[in-house]
Each structure stands twice: as C-alpha cells, then as structure tokens.
Length: 118
Image (cartoon, rainbow, N blue to C red; front, side):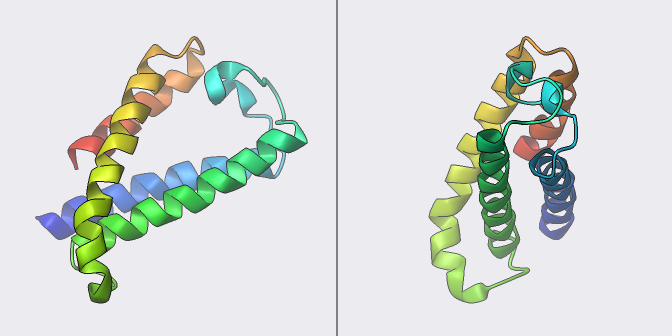
C-alpha cells in the first residue's frame, strides 16, 4: 500500500516536473501557473524559477520514495523530517491552486490534493 501511494505521488510529481520543464523551455503555458500573472511564455527570470521548482520537486519525490523504503535507505532518518516538509508543501499547493485567480491553473488543485492524501 505504501509503495503504491509513493508511486502515485511520484507519477503526479513527474507530470508537474514536465509542466515546469515546458515552462522553462518557453512553452506558452504561463496562464496555468503563478496565478496567470505571466500568460504565454515565461520571461527569463521566471524560467529560472521553473528550473528551481524542478529541483525542489525532484527532492520532494526522492523524500517520498525514501520514506516508502523504495530508495536510499541511508537517508531514512532524514525522510522522517523531510516528509513533513512534503506535507506542508502539498498543503500549500492545494490551497493556492484552489484559490488562484487563473481558472486554468485550478487544474493543479486536484493533483496537489491527491499528492497530499497519498
């Protein structure tokens, strides 16, 4: 059960990473991110933010997979603390994606919500 939840979480995180990668590469998806403040292609400074997001999301995925005892058993003690950072991150993401003024960005609310409960 834990492994299945971790895999679902990781797949959803991978989808978000691909979305952020698209933003970083100049895909015109800005209206579906950051409250729609940057419709179309992200400006250069926001592309850097997207790359930072990718790094953070990768770390979050690694924490979840480690906590599920699927990767890096030597980091299990860190994962006990790190998993709570993941919970906070997913909670904030669920709230922000629910209240965003960008209607299209609200598609991420269920993703963040499922990540939170998984």
